[in-house]
Amino acid sequence: MLQLILKRLLWAFFLIFFASFLCFVMMYYAKGSVVFAAVPQGVSLKVKEEIEKNLNLDKPLLEQYENWAFKALKGDFSYSLISGEKVNEILKEKLPYTIILGSLAFFVLFVLSLILGLLCVFYKDSFLDKFITFFTMSFLALPTFSLSLMLILFFSVIFKFFPSSAIADIGFEDDVKNRLWHLFLPVCALVFSHLAVFVRFIRTTLIDSLNQNFIESAFARGLSKKRVYLHFVLKDAFGSILAYFGASFVSFLMGTYIVESVFSYEGIGNLVIKSILFKDYPVVLAVVSFSILVVVFVNLIVEILCKMINPRFANA
Image (tube, rainbow, N blue to C red; front, side, top):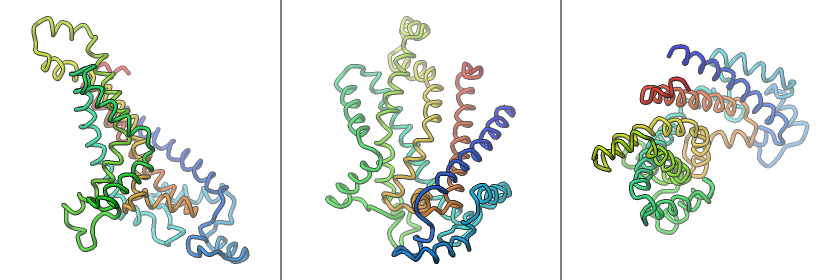
């Protein structure tokens, strides 16, 4: 187990510097400038060059990245080029909101996908199975961005059931009920946009488990259908389901950032999109590093759980 953890940490270290360098190169050669974040109406070329020089943005690409990398190794992600605040402090303020939204949505997605997948297999080829497939697939056709806008249009603008932005109403920041009310639409956007793929995978995995010899033996012993499905089939397929959820966490995390930007949710997703537009590379690289660490950590936990649940994963 210790060897596995060390391998994953080394892999995370390599990924962070590879992805951050690639991201920095793309931002370095992209059009735009951090100058336009403070002066959106535009400035003269001479003033723009002077501001960039003061921010050390006139240095060669490798020199700029080297300066950032050595500071990052010490846990210092420098200062935001837009606000001048320490990136560590910005992340400390924004991260809890993203963690709350992402964790809640991922938990709801996992539980709902598992329930719907079990229903599809339990009532295979019935009207319920076809309805669940049709319902979930209808959301798959819409990108996360479009689905979020549709939810805002119907439930915030037309019917006015839920708020369309922010983490809470003004003056109600400490009200848990109000915070959850604001989380409802972002969580729905994240869950519905991923639901079809996960339900389909769980359905397929459970059907494959049904074809195992020990499942046929369980039916031959006269065990009830419900007991066989919940005790044998689900247990056999659970490791594969967990592994798939862990492998899909990258796309889910990216979806979280997009949803945050659409709903003006005060997490790091809304922050990073603005930072990309204005080439605020210290913030972008810090978020990239954090995202990789989270993905590696989630996959490590999932891998450990899979090996505990099903010994077959121990040799995988």
